Image 1 (cartoon, one colour):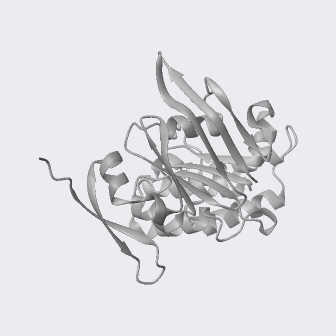
Image 2 (cartoon, one colour):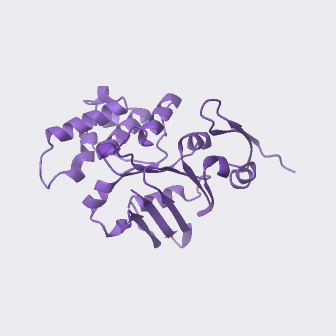
Image 3 (cartoon, one colour):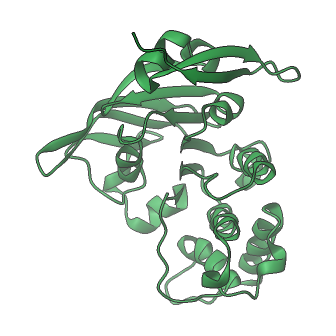
Length: 264
């Protein structure tokens, strides 16, 4: 599904956190949003997965206004993994992942055998099947993240919105998660989902995203393929670092080595 964000602005307490941002994600693409802390990445994504409403602008999925959809219809199309996920009750891992099937169930209907199979498959994909009977609150940060990703996969969305999905994960888990959520393993009906993700690590973003949007002070300042966007000049201006660009010896993806920006 194509995602279109048009002239989206977010104001909070009189401050503009997001400034007339427009971007799009083509069906099956992995689109990364990168920028310094406080640049507006999470504020923008919160509007995309409807945790907050923009002050102005629109979010469309395949041409349909996301905010005009019912919550259930929106959840059938789009799943989200927020940066912060609170949990007051100690559900089991099985119960947490099963929540991803709710948009596909009739009101008051019990989970079907097909629902259970899809939840188990999602847990296997993130290598968390062994956690099924554990209480969610007893898990480590990395284990919680994998379970939440499994919940999103069980939802079978056509669009995945992910805010820092590699938080709390070791490097092997980071690479595995980005492979899974990046659509490389396929989605419902074998169709790869469209992914919109904020990533803190620029090298992970460069290696796994088809397109990058760079946001600074709430506005998009550059967009395009990672090799085109991640220039030394832009990284110095936006992130305040000196960057040396190299190519990955196997994939050819741009990779970055960083130094402090020299002061005059």
